[in-house]
Length: 315
Ligand SMILES: [Zn+2]
Ligand SMILES: [Zn+2]
Image 1 (cartoon, rainbow, N blue to C red):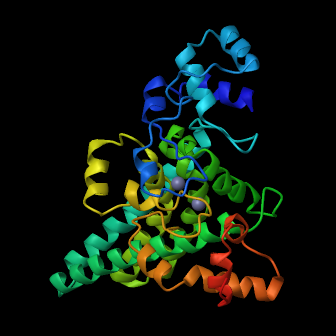
Image 2 (spheres, rainbow, N blue to C red):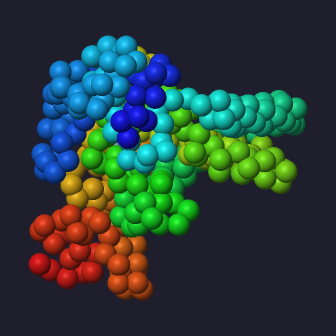
């Protein structure tokens, strides 16, 4: 683990500036909104003494103390994980973005050439908005599933499950990832689906629905990352404050044990309806009745209220 963190450092990703931007929420606190004003954790501020092993490695590689603090602050839950942008990550993400841009430009051309360009453009814009909302809802259900079921040993999704569950323990780690590193795992699914979409020729509106839904999914971890930054880029902060993308406040509401709601991580717009309809509690009841498996949010909830809400019983 230490070697992985130091390797990330040597590759130049970790800087004191990034450490200053990172934020952490104390897991276990029930003061939901208070976490948003929590001071930076000591290890993120670069004041904590590094472990002896890491210290020796740092001396050997001639790194500064603030860089070592950044490495300490980023906690990786999987040994093979890295914080750097590897060439294969950049390649898959670039291919996905280029493909989506080409398909969007094809739609623009088709709309311009249409006999009713205004109507076609309106349909394409509406489909784009619908696609983004679909991606927001999809991340809600996916995030709920990996937060609540399985572990590192689970086939296929084990590493993703470990990453999501580990994120509750050290939420600031995601802010140390550069763009390609942060989103490339989603690109493996998005790129072939874009290819299938292009081959199926669903028309301008259908194409824009698919492209925006898939790009929403590609961007979900980046938007999630921004929601954990103390000082995101100014244009991002403006989009957050205007409610267009996932805000710090909206996602901050998820980061309290037992992590039972606010799972959507693209715009957060679907959180209200998905939480108020008790969708996740219904899903948990179905899983429990068919398999007997209890979700993690039931186990973490010392009041028993979440399980009671799911099963329709009173505590
Ligand atoms: Zn979560
Ligand atoms: Zn988070």
